Image 1 (tube, rainbow, N blue to C red):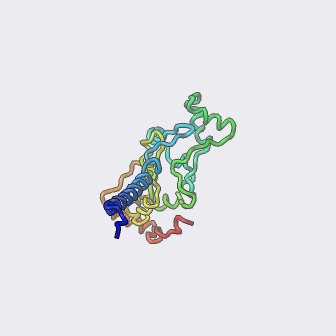
Image 2: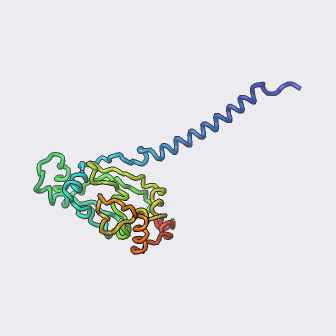
Image 3: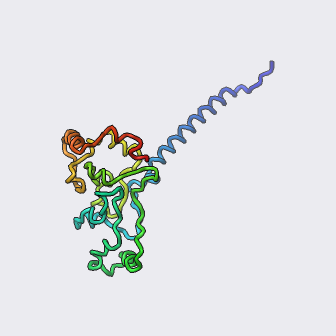
Length: 218
């Protein structure tokens, strides 16, 4: 009976299978790498704004409390973006002619809100409430990082579900006294887990409920 396949067919088949496996593996690695890359997550990537507002200067240097600008953070799901009038409370007297603040002056003169670009922007299918996190002792820096050191604002965490669940599964690792929520320089104590477990109990944090899908996906 004549030979139907070339003598090297088995070798070619093995090489082809290996190539497909390597190609699929490489493709999976590339997808994983791109998913976690700064290009996708925007972690440590400063976001361009109409005015280069500096938290380092306003909070770190001048000591302006977070709540002066983010007025609704303690009572609403949204932390709040300061209206132009808030900016001009100071800048009607300070640096009044600086070109860098021209968009702010124009916003006030035309009664047109400033169009700030979101830095921490969750998908529409995710519900997040700032007030409940503040009430339960989760500090601003836990999610937003050391903003007092940021001349421009950027994300320090991916905001991926995996990152959120790390806290929701064991909030004792992150919870802090309520009076320290707005303290960007606060550092967890050596006995954080012990203190955290006590605060979880004192603040009535239901750890089991935190991992329910409906908590964030409503």
